[in-house]
Amino acid sequence: MILTLALLLTALAAGCGEEEAADTRGDVGAGEEPYSVEIDPADFVAGVDNPYLPYRPGTTWIYEGETDEGTERIEVTVTGETREVMGVTCVVVRDQVRIDGELVEDTLDWFAQDRDGNVWYFGEDSKELENGEVVSAAGSWEAGVDGALPGIVMQADPVIGETYHQEYYRGEAEDMAKVLSLDETVELALGAYTGCLQTEEWTPLEPGIAEHKFYARGVGVILEEKVKGGEGRIELIEFREG
Image 1 (cartoon, one colour):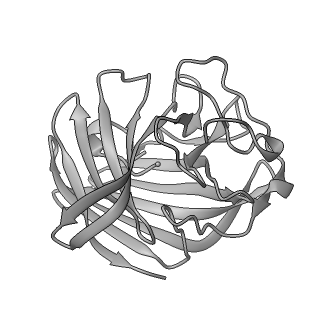
Image 2 (spheres, rainbow, N blue to C red):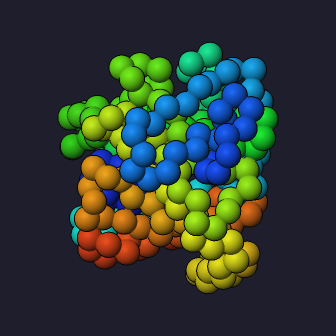
């Protein structure tokens, strides 16, 4: 799951312009159909070190905020594990979501970086829980299976105005993003961050909902705010580098 407010239902969840080597920028404008992309494992590198989304093993982010469902706490950790998807070796990132202290979602996400520096999202193994028991695996998908395709969650060189697919499993996972700004200042209790990337993210599956995300260089996601379909804000409260 791409890190996303629980207000977006299942999902914590997490490019454009001209195509580059082996179509690894995943360029598709909003509304264009069908989405398609060709993946060549030779175009990918080991590890993920994009400055806006650095997934170094052992790194942990902790987020907190108030949502319609209660106090939400999200812990994201880059494991030391990998998983092969479509022949590409992906970094495994674990997301755990708690509402008022109760674990409600436990997800393993799979990311890989291409040689140009774009970070791709290859799927997730998601479990929803109630009272400690798994009640659903809704939201799980794997690129290359049942028509699902990977998307870009972070471009190597974001350009204001560009829109791109972050994931694509028709009717199930169709998150999109648009670059809004490259020079935002964000003040949190944890500190002030300058030169931040701001995106708007949404899914055509839930057209009444949208959020803004802010990314700081060397850190990753630092703030999410719901801007359409209700209210909600979740921010980084702790960051431990691996």
